[in-house]
Length: 314
Image (cartoon, rainbow, N blue to C red; front, side, top):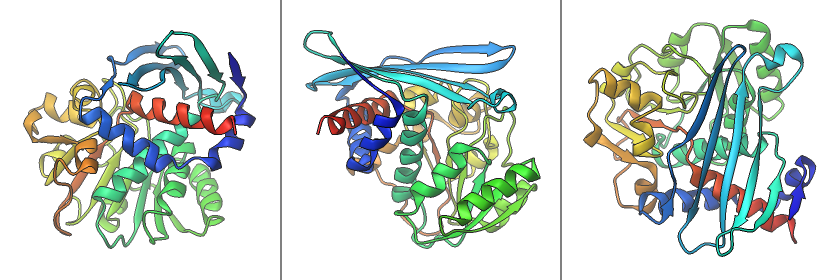
């Protein structure tokens, strides 16, 4: 069994086309070509944190994967990263462990950012005039970086509660070629941006108003039963609501919250993998409002783990 350190994982990353790999994973999932059991989850209270265990395999593949990832949101005050974890790779044929990827949560962050880029690729309007980022942490910054090949827009508005964190985020992303403004008023995002990405662990909605026609929202911070970044009324008035996993989104995330109050019906939701495969329609007009609820599916972890491991062997 091999052990890959974070340094080795980062060396292999540029060798992999993650957009293609994770798109294939989403398609396999939506077409019933994967086995993905329900998410294992630990919610901790003092200090607050959550641990997700995601696992599964693609049928006929060489491997299966078990991923452990955690988020402890008071860690930065202790000088520690908020995310941690590892990926475990096994042979499907024998169950033998092939590799442990000690990614410290890095691959979860990357595959989440890639999923955001994929959602924007298929659902964002053709003409993005301003990108709105809700949140100032690592995922907020990664989302912007992975959006770069998907849209030519470089005008960004970042929302956060802490001006010092907003300033730090703006400074870093300006270095990547974005023109970044900041705000502590979420309505500014709703009123001026037509591609919005939410990246916080909020448990009450941050986006609560009416979106501009043609807006796409990728909501990815809400990945548990109690988190919510987007008001149910926004999903209610959207033209298209998309889940990374319908079964998973029935139990967690923005779709779960909207279903709970009767704002939408389960039958109105389509899966991202169906849209990628051409089995369901995505955005059909520039005026539509679209919402993608990304709770994080094990096929993302399967695909990124396999790809990084195999790239590391070259």
